[in-house]
Image (cartoon, rainbow, N blue to C red):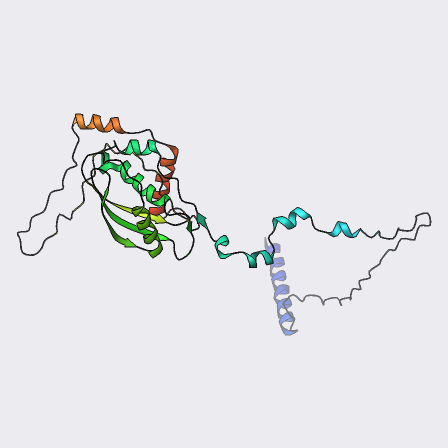
Length: 287
């Protein structure tokens, strides 16, 4: 036991003497990194291997000149593309869009219209507008195109009683329409046997055509006309008006209405779709 303590004291004394000696000798207690090795510059050498010429290969043949006729363009391609001279000499009317006048209503169309009483003689009113447009001629794109809206009154015997221009966007369209109305052939009597009063818009344009109407919904009651229930003139007693209910046809009138309905056509459906797209602006037809 005494011997172990003696050796421990000796080791402690030697350790203290070594620490004092290191402090006195100013020894640096840090890691010193070795010096970087000098960089050697690299040299890049490009070698190009050129194969030796072979003696057994024949010399390349000289290029053969193509005949002059092969360089000429095809005749049909030239005819398909109009030249600048032809475009310059073409008339302005040939470069503008146009639409021919539609065919007038046939005798079968007028026979149907003369007996169709639904919706204020809907078939008669449509045939009248088609008859006027067919007599106005071809519509050409330009300042003369436009629309005109008339208020028409036709006597029970089919003769014209009154025509009034409500508005127009083209003086030429109004002039041609009035000339066509003046020269219109005799029309059949009105379906109801009474005077027929209606408003009609005639479109004289190469981008619009009044297609045939649809008749399948003519027996449905008309929706009530909206009127503001809170409108007040400021003087009379203020009363909230009740909405007017839609009128319903009696069974006999409904049966007569359904009997007059014609068969629908693809042209009528297409015309209805086109009118809806034109009204709501959902089709970009490039007009």
